[in-house]
Image (cartoon, helix red, strand yellow):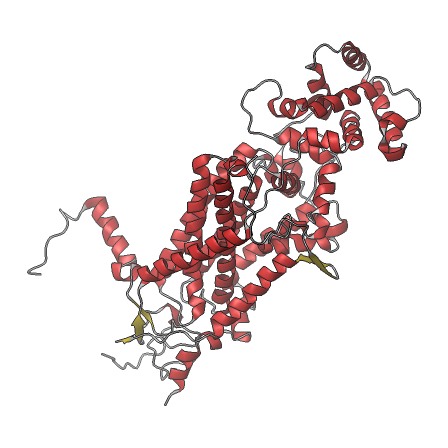
Length: 218
Length: 324
Length: 55
C-alpha cells in the first residue's frame, strides 16, 4: 500500500470507526451524486425535491413569523403577508408531497430493501399533518377557537387530550414552533439519506444488470 | 468478468431491485436540482401569497358573545350551574362524571386519560368570577343565598330556571314566568353584565391567581358550551357534519388532506354513534398504520402491477429493453 | 387596526360549496384536488428531457 496516506491515528478510535461506517453506508459520490440511472427520466421524479424545497420555505416563513411573535400578523401588513407566505408554502408542501406519494406508490418504490424509505415517508406525512394542525391552533383567531374546541373531542375520546391539550395555546405554540418541526425535519433527513443510500428504485421487472437476457420476474 | 457456475439459483431470495444498478446512467446535478426547485417553489409561494393573501377572522371574545347573543349566554351560564352543559358532563380530562367518556369497543380510552385539566363548571365559570365583583350588595346577597343552600336546592333553582328559559320566547330571561328560581337569575344576569363589560375574558384566563396566561382551556370550554360559536362556525361550513374539518373560512382552500378523517363522520355507523370520535380516530390510526406497512401487505402492494401507471413512467426504459 | 392592502383575488367572501349526495366540498378544495390530479397526470405523461448518457 505504498503512496497511501495514513489517515487515522492507530485506527481512529470511535471517531474513525464512525467515519468509516458512515462512508461505507453512504459514500460521498452517492450522497452528492452527479449521475443517476438512465431510467430516472420522468417529471414525476421532481416531486420529492419540490416537497423538500416547500418545507424549506415553510420553515423560513415560520421563522420570520416567530421573529416578531405570535400576534404580529394581526396588526401588521408585512406580518399578514408573511402569514400568507407561510399558509401557501404549507399548501404547496402538501400538494407536492401527496403527488410524490401517488408516484412512489405506483412505482412500488418500497422494493429492494426500501421499505424503511416508504415507512419514513408515511410517518413524515402523518407528522406533517399534526404539525399543520398545531399551526391552525396558534393563529389566535376564530379559526383557532373552532378547530381547538372541535379537535379536543377527537383527542379526548382516545385519552390523548389529557396530555396534549389543544385548548392550551401556550403548549400548542411550542409544539408547533419547536417540537413538531424537529420531528418532521429528522424524518425528512432520514428519508432523503435512505433514498441516497439505497438508490432510486429500478423499474418493475428490471433485471439488475440492465440486460433483459437475465432472469424472468422481479 | 462473468463466471458461469453449475450452482443452482441461490436459495436466498434477494430482490434484484436491491442490487446496485449496473445499467446505463445519465447526467444528474443534485445541487442544481435543489436550487431550481427552491426557486420554483419560492416564486409559486410569492405569487399565491400576493394574489390570494390569507384569512384572519377575528376571534369571538366572551364580551362579543354576550353582546351578540345575550340569551344564549345566559342559558349557557345556567347550564354550567345546574351541571347540564357539555363541559359539566364531559368526563375526562375535565370532570369526574361517572360513565362519561367515549369507548373504543370495550376500551374506555377517554377515562384512562384521567382528569388532568379539572374544571368545576359552576365555580370556575360562574361563581368564582362573580365573587370578585366589588360593590354590588345585591350580587353579594345572591351569592350568599346560593352558597348557603343545599346542593339539591341549588340544582333545583338552576334546572327550573333553565327549563323556563328554554320555553320562553327567544329564550329571553325577561319573558320567563314567575317561579322560584332562587338567586339564579341574579347570578346569571350579573355574569352577563360582567361579560358585556369585558371583565369575564380576563377572569377566566387568569383565574385571579396569575398575571401571565397562555392556557385558554376555561374560556374556550365556556364559549363552546354555548350555541353562538357553533352557529358562526356552521355559517362558515365548518361544522363536523358539513365536512368542516377540511374547510377554511371564506373561499380559501382548507385541508384537503383531511378528507378521509372527516368522511367517516358523514356516514353510519359513525354519524349516529356516541363513540364516533373514538371510532374514527381508532380507524384512522389503523389505516395510517396500514399505509405505512403497504410494502408488507399482500394485495395492497400488488396494486402497482394491477394498475400499471409505471409502464407510462418508465416507458423510455421499457422501450430500450424491447429493442432486439 | 392596520388597514390591509386588499388582495387582488379576495377570498374573504362566504365560501361556495358543492353538494353531491353525502359529499359536500368547497369549490376551493375541489380546485386544489383537481389541479393535483391534472399535475400528476401531466407529470407522468409529459416527456422528460433526454439526458446525456454516461457509461
